[in-house]
Length: 244
Image (cartoon, rainbow, N blue to C red):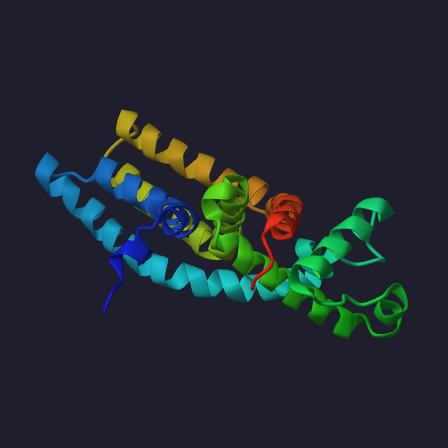
């Protein structure tokens, strides 16, 4: 059974539905604006587009997760993993504090510099496991860390939009086909200008903005906000009375 509260949760809306809408936008506008029938009949293509959007919502999550696996290879690790590595650190003092807080919070030991050097794959697996523990802890206290949720949503939106880039470009091509047919059967007018302008703007966005480094920027921001929660989490842990 469909869980509508999940389908239209804030995260699902921003990270999945918005990419789906942007993907079909050129075709929806082209067909709706250029539909040579009565206004009510012109709503039919919009209704069809909504059906396509719903279908894409169910596809986007899987495509985004598959893309993320490729991005991990391209980036040499997720930003959260890189922020725990010795070999990627840009601030050794901050790294030392971050690792100590994670070890204190979850009563675990992260790989030493030597262990990371000898077996980087195993070290990364331990960093990923520690990060997941932190994500689970923060998820329990979402209201206390709204910026983490915001950055997570932004990352999800960008990742999923990049995953839909090939489909989006195909949709632009379809809209150009509709516009070409309209031009051949009718004439160059204001409605055609509106449709063509939308196609051009969306195509430029797909080609120039939706890129791997754009997604990585959001991932980096999310990783930094996530690890900033360690200050509050470790402080609250030390202030809790010991269990009897």
